[in-house]
Image (cartoon, rainbow, N blue to C red; front, top):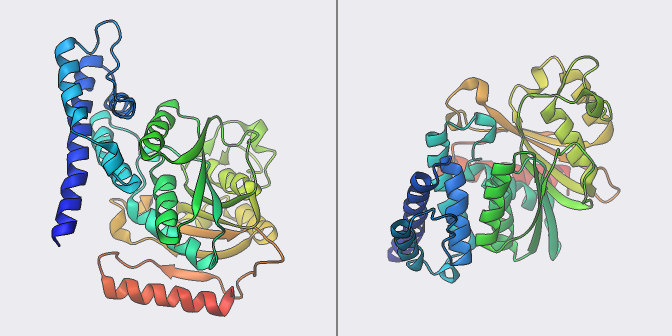
Length: 341
């Protein structure tokens, strides 16, 4: 117990330094809170408070230097750094009023995704490539990378794409502080991609319509008329970059198979992927029923992997109910033994 309290204090110290330095920079730079988070993280990483045209002023610079001097980054695990950044981002969401599509993916969703990777890949390769085509601030991808590394000692290389420059800058700052091996791309994820042969794609997909109809037409999941759903197109694009047998883990609206475009998506899934599972997240994850999400589990067809005889369906239990969660894990392992082993 003493160890866990100390670990908690260690994390809290980093959070407090990031929070206080961000607050100072937010006032000094007169920017959004999230832009101040990026600046604070970059200053901490470089060990030098950036000053431009006397901003932040000398007094603030002195305060910031004293704050950053309290932190020895080498004493922090990547997961601690990621969690501290995430806590500051939760505050940024409130202060800046950031829209739901751009908010941070909860850690529990990363843990569930990592668990599914270990179910489908009993023997993980020594090196893995993991991608997120809607990376946002990087919280989901980086948590999965860290957890895979910690659970199985694999070297993990990450790839992330976002068309939002600010969110991508957060991801860049975060991956630098965590010393993760990640390539980030500022582009439309439905344009040509510069990577392929990925082992796992994990994504908390933005929901809504994709505005570029011409580009959408290059995808089988495009709507027959009008705008297409961005999350449908992103699933198809993600499956393209996977290597044969690669795993696609997508957080999608729980109503995904009840929308007016569901028939087209279902037909494409049946033809082009192994549709292995659909698991609903606990309802208490979401403030609003409309926001409820499920984890869609797809695999790229390959002679080396099996299409499940029976799709894994069900509900993730409440994570705080240990007995229910242990029973759920056993159920999934039994399903795997019967269907994909």
